[in-house]
Image (cartoon, rainbow, N blue to C red; front, side):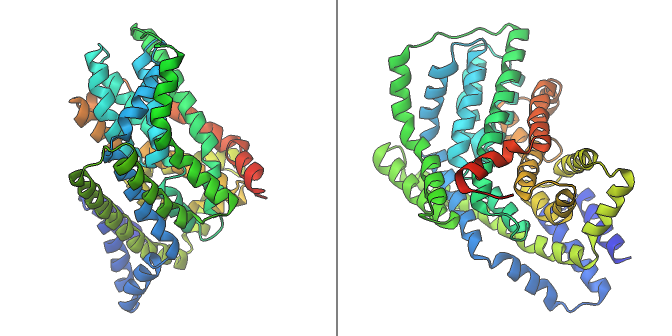
Length: 430
């Protein structure tokens, strides 16, 4: 009965339009009152969930991404991407994919990525004769690569939701190859649609110009290398790397590029504080939710239910993907990770999937949810920039969805896409 109350109140609050964080917290509170547990349990679980030293990486990575967004780094990355691939058919679309991938590496946030790249690329593509729905779809889907990059705070959330079963360093190394696979899939989709619609190709500016734009963008791109090198070499931890990222970004935007203004700095700080507050609230209330799911053995129940459908690992993995996709359409990325990881990670591990590989599966699935109504944060941002309705964008979204799903299937059923680099660089034994 308690499990029914927990599930019914949670989905009931969501249907009523209650924000996800409050729906999670209120459903947990209702269940605790029904169970007759002390009210102090609520606060104990919230505080224990948030009072973890590793979570310091979250505000630092978020702040670093906001500084990159407001510090003029995007323009230099766009110019580099345009010079590299702008001469191919549908060149601006291809440039958009590459630019989103590069900026996703330095921001670690799909929402920041679509905000920065969309503000530059979508108006530029419209001016050059590209359809608005194409410009928005390319931008919103390519920006999802940021969820897999070393600066992604969602990796930190997953590592802690996994209960210490996976190292953050292994996750950071594991995300690089899936990110490249996702970028290639998006390039194929962008090119195929461009050819079908007869979009023009640009002119190659020459290698000297490519090298000049690369030199201009390199200081911003170095943040990825600094984080990877520092963590893999053991010079600093993932938490310390986030602080290094903020320090480097401040020096870069204020003293090297000289594009950061005091007003933009304050705006970036305020946005980082707001985002961090939302994430930590989700973590706190989700800890209550996880406590109750553990108490009522939800993971065991879900595993038994899936085993009745099939005992074949590939079927179980497919079911997990479908469930995560459906949940991701109306839940925030962080909430989905925090709630679903304790449920599905044990099931996936029992079926033979490594927790690092499952992390990549989880991140891509949750990123897919960011581009799917009714929540669809990145999609709403992209549509707002492009001045087009979500419905109009959804009518031509299938090629880009297909690219995302193809990347998801590669990661789900080919473990080496996620595990090769951690094994090579860190000696990971998973």
